[in-house]
Structures are given as structure tokens and as C-alpha cells.
Amino acid sequence: MQESEWRSGWFEQFPEQRLTRRQQFLRKLFRTDRKTLHLVLFVLTFLSTYLVVGSILYSIGVMSILLFHEMGHYLMCRRYGIPATLPYFIPVPFPPFGTWGAVIAMHRIMPNRRVLFDVGAAGPIAGLILAFPITIIGLKYSTFIRPETLGPNVMSMGEPLVFQFLRYLVLGPLPEGMDVLIHPLAYAGWVGLFVTALNLLPVGQLDGGHIAYALLGPEKSRYVYYIALGGFAIAALYFPGWIFMLFLLAFFFLRHPPTMADYIPLDRKRKILGVLMFFVFVVSFTPVPFKI
Image 1 (cartoon, rainbow, N blue to C red):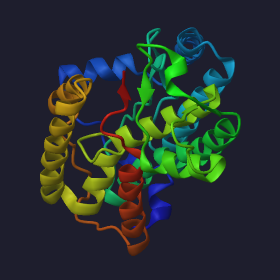
Image 2: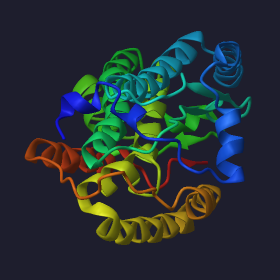
Image 3: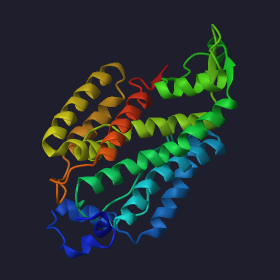
């Protein structure tokens, strides 16, 4: 089957799959005609991010990265004729982020692993396109500070490798006895990298799970899922905050549905890009994101 066929309403040739009650509930919940709900959640999430961090620049930065990420998925779905909702933002008026990100819902099974790969990879790529410049601009306005001047019970952030590289690129070597007080826009970029890394976990129906399934197929990708969960469980020993995430992954996101044509392999370009996406995960992930 040619890619032009996938993009020209190929899905419409197939009847709806028989849905479980849970799937029927989710389909009703994530209907494609709830434009008012999308707008309300967007506004509430903008307000909750501002409430938590107290910076409109942070809200603009983090919301823009999340929007780019989800629109990457959405536009790729549109390219292949896959029915999908606009992003649903998730407001959480509590530290440390003010949001749990955003999601879109897709209402058809993927036709093959190539389409699955393109949809899964489009979100992280789009988000990173904005996360990098936002991080760099924010770091330009960040300052060096002595940690003892901040007082007790101050939360510090773990720095993934890519953030360390960008910090060194912008600010140079860290002076002895100093730390960096990052600008709210740099924090938005850090959150964008953090969210990208979480989404690239090669587990279930996360973006990384889609990419792993597309690269390796249904059998081999299952072993990758279990290895990733084991690594995540080890990380939870050092940062208990991962326990809740581990529970969600293990019980709700582990199983990946098959495509309609799993036998169609990826081409060389997609395989190379898939390996690069897992490299992005490695350099963007931090096992201990926060410490006091």
C-alpha cells in the first residue's frame, strides 16, 4: 500500500471496531466536537501554571511547548486521515508545574507501523523545536547565585545532559561554590524537556512506546517495555515521586494495540530517526528531577 493511499481517507474503507464499554466511555469523553471544552481547559491550565510559578513568561513558554507537542501529533493524524481531537490540557493548580501536560485522542486503529511511527515521533520533535530556543533564551536571563543565600527547604532541579550542555553553552563553566538561579522561561524549557523525556519512555501507548512498537514489532517491543519498567522501578528507589508514574504505566498504559498491518516494516530513514529519538530520551531524562 502506498503512502498516498493512507492520506486519502484509507481508514474510511473499514468498519468501526467492536468497542468495549471502557472504549465506548473514552470515545464519548474525548469526542471531536467539544471545542468549548478544549478552550476552557486551555485557559484553566494557563491560569494554573501562572498560579503555581507566578510568572506569565513561564505560562506562555510551557503552554507553547505543550501545544507544539500535541499539535505535532494532531497534524500528523490529519496528514494520514486519522480522526483525532484537538489537545486537552490538564490543569493542576499545585507545584511543581501547574499542569500534567496535554493529550489528544485518536479514534481509529493505526493502519501500519510506518504511520504509527510518524504519529508517535511527530509530537516530541515538534515540542523540542520550541523547547530548545525557549531554554536558551531563559538561560540568557538566568544568574549565578550562592546556594546558602536561598535559605532552607529550597527545591533544586536535577539537570538532564541536554540541559547541562545548553547551560554550559549559554553561561559557561559554573563558578566554584555557585549555582544557577534559572529564569522562569528557562524553567519552562526544563519542563518541556522533562515532559518530552517522559513521553519518550518506550512503554505502552506513550510516544516512546509507539516508536518502540513501530521499530521492533509486537513481540520484541514487549521485552523493551518490561526492561523500561524495571529501570523506572529502580529510579523510584532514588525518587519516590516515580512510584505513582510507575503505577500508571504498569496498569493503564502497558499494552499497545496492534496496527492493521504489523507486517509492513519501517524504512531505513524511520529506523535511524527512531534510534535518534531514544538518544533524545537518554539525554533529556533525569532520574531525580527534584530534591530539597
